Length: 309
Image (cartoon, rainbow, N blue to C red; front, side, top):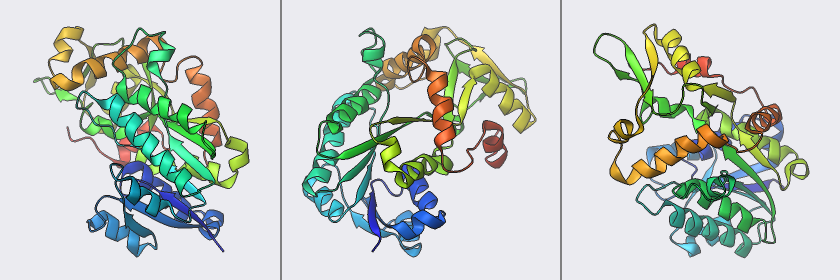
């Protein structure tokens, strides 16, 4: 009898990637049956998953009863939370993350995989106080470690998909484009094709849980500097994209007020401490080697998803 894997946020990038990885893996497809949760089972994305043989159930992090019901019979639960930029990101992360973990315990699920992030407040020695979703996810990670669950963790890097919206290059007016920020061009980001690759790390955990139990996989293909990202954009688009380092106050004006402090501190954190803190590069290299499948390089991602310049 196959083991039941319950995937929260099944229609999102992380959840969808896990489903595709399991269905595309000859061993795991036989070993696990899949149940996905979503707030809206009637959406087109949810219906597509049903056609692929995934059981889809309604569940909401604000409704603990729906979570317990969704997790009934689960052998393994994959849990992730959605970041809400409303000035209370930390509180949302902790409340929602604990609700998911508590529901897994209540449903007696023995195995738990949680999508976490580093705690910038701790890593910076308390200097950074506005990294709500980073700190909140790590606080939940520490909570999960205290529960009667066998747990493992992933910590996704920066989404490559951000280069098409919040981090997209903008026209300068002379036919060229600028990737603008206030940090040094040498600052490196660990980049992940969230939709295409997240599942490859979760698949590795599913294939050998004992090997990764208690560990955090720092999920990224590699580290890329802002300068390297701009150069890759230029090459892929056939147009000039330059990295433009702006004064911080100028850059802040381009962000919604509720996001300014959070995003500014996040970038300062990357610059001063590294995305995963101490030994970021080594963590990324080790984790990339653990993925169950070939990871997507930035050049490949930009070729397959052309920038609209």
